View 1 (cartoon, rainbow, N blue to C red):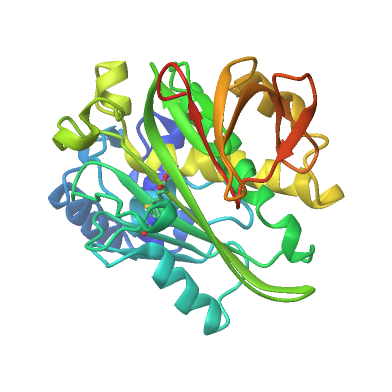
View 2 (tube, protein in one colour):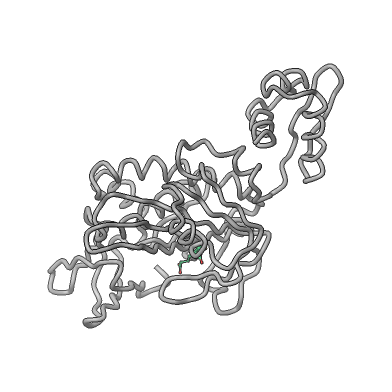
Amino acid sequence: MKKAEILKLLRESGDYLSGQELCGRFGVSRTAVWKIITSLKEEGYEIEAVQNKGYRLKASPDLLEEGEIVSRLGTSRMGKNLICLPSTGSTNVDAKKAAEEGAPEGTLVVTDCQKTGRGRRGRAWESPAGCNLYFTLLLRPSCRPGQASMLTLVMALAAAGAVRELGLDAGIKWPNDIVLSGKKVCGILTEMSAETDYIHYVVIGTGINVNQEKFPEEIEKTATSLKREKGEQIARAALLASIMAHFERAYETFCASWDLRTLLPAYQELLLNKDRPVRVLDPGGAFEGVARGINDSGELLVERPDGTLEAVYAGEVSVRGIYGYV
Ligand code: BTN
């Protein structure tokens, strides 16, 4: 895609690039370059054209569009097959359909708006247009089905890492909510198609409140956005590319052992529940204790009042903070 390549080059150079340089690089005519530049300007890119110097990219619009995303991706597999939709029902549904049709590992479905966004435990995920990130990554790991739930923690680590690079103090509420100032900013919904001992595919859907300013009353007290916390607009495509880069590295590490042993220190560091009192809503009976960390399998270790340590599995229980959201 020439448009993405030209954008990438202009962005990476940060300086003027002559029309001739761009033509030579991509094997297209000067008119073709001019046409691409014109269409980029129409989309909202601020491109300065100076005689004898060339073109310089001054600012990019906050678009979640193929060219913008591709021009920012630096991964070798994650997001290389990109399905970019202006609006959809749920990117998890789209990713599962793509998986059934044979889409490769790393396929990324991104949208600007979801009509029927889905959250965990059958809840809805409000997905207004023009402000947030909603995306689903398709994986085909060759681990056992029981190990796939750890991938949610791997994505949480990647998303938290990328948010922290924006200068925000993101932490993780086990297993996979990203939290800023005690409020949720990101949720992850992982779904899997598997047989007893074989995974067909896993889809990891992530929703991040990026530039949303107002929240419905029901979640106003527990939800926030990156813009609210940072006090400035965040470029969604750049954040998405950064998450993909973080995830690609973390996934490679995970695949080496099919557990979290190597990623454990990084995860524990960000785990907000650590040493905090929690209520474990176990189908077999709720109990309270103090969260002590996670184990190699991503289970939360909860110390009961009698001092025994219980490993709590994410798929079965939900954990609530006793003195607040975390
Ligand atoms: C949660 O309840 O915390 C999980 C929310 C997951 C939302 C994301 S948005 C992209 C993907 N598509 C969906 O329908 N859900 C996930």
